[in-house]
Amino acid sequence: MGLFSLKRRRNEETKPVERGRGDDSGEVGAASELSAKVLESATSLGDDPSISQLNEVADLYMQIGDTDRAIELFERSMAKEKQLGKVSTSLVKLYNVKRAAAARAGDDEAIAYWMKRSQAMLQLSKDMLRGNV
Image (cartoon, rainbow, N blue to C red; front, side, top):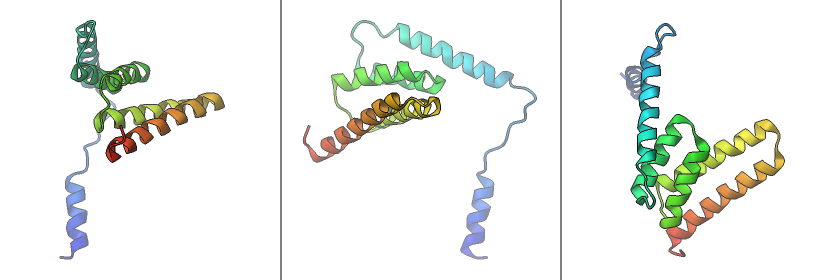
């Protein structure tokens, strides 16, 4: 048995199971449960939420696809404290989602805006790594 056949067998063992289109009630239930969790978390933020609270709720908004709200909360978190890692990565991903939507709409001004925001976040990350912030 060669190395490649072992790798192929491992890949076959870890392939995700495809769901049928028959019963989506589990997915709907999970989505409504996540939406309820987002609503509950968002209402508990208060006037001066902690960085971890902002990040948690922003992550939930990102999971349900509310890009604008996720960006808003991640940016509030970054305004409190510049952070490397998940927050900055998530912001770049969200900015790219917005840029892609602008590209599909043919909005050159919005494309430039979101590209500029992405580049600024990447530059901030580089500066933080170099200790310039």
